[in-house]
Image 1 (tube, rainbow over the protein chains, first blue to last red):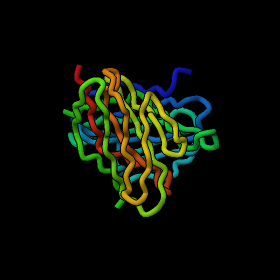
Image 2 (image 1 turned 120 degrees about the horizontal axis):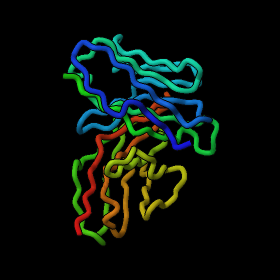
Image 3 (image 1 turned 45 degrees about the vertical axis):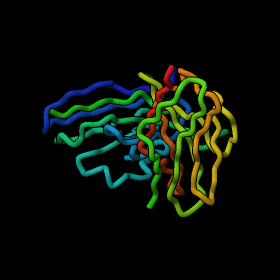
Image 4 (image 1 turned 30 degrees about the horizontal axis):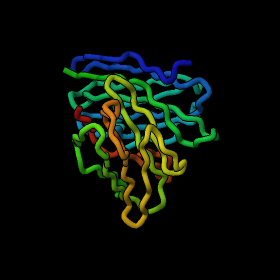
Length: 116
Length: 108
């Protein structure tokens, strides 16, 4: 297990198109988080899952955004009808609730989205 | 409001000099505090957390509840410390709130 992986690493799309990103967490981790990071900002929380249940969604996550974690393993984040303001780095992180260090989140490399 | 303030966008320090990255938080409670680091072309990773009270790579951070601060310190900077540093806390809703980050540049 090489840690959290995300695909694709880069995505360029035209405004109005739909995009989907994938995150594969560390295999035994039961929590999975999505963050968005724009230039000059720290990561901002979008949503998170405990196993397959989506526990919370940020108000940053408009109706155009949807996330799933169907079997409690990998997760997908879909953005419909992309807008230029969606351009950002999308980060995924996973953690093990109940582990030695509760809430230690391990981050993936991110997917950089550019909407033209 | 729940907020992390890192007042310096960029901090340049000579190799061997002391480093202090400032962090103040705003939260009505006793949050768990962290410092995350991102080296060039690497992913974001946890550097240290206040509950473990460890020194990692020579860095320490002390929580000052009175000043709501969690400054990151290192007595002697090394070139490999150049990176982006983010202060963060975990709120009661299990969300990590990040600051905007400080870029630390170690001068030779």
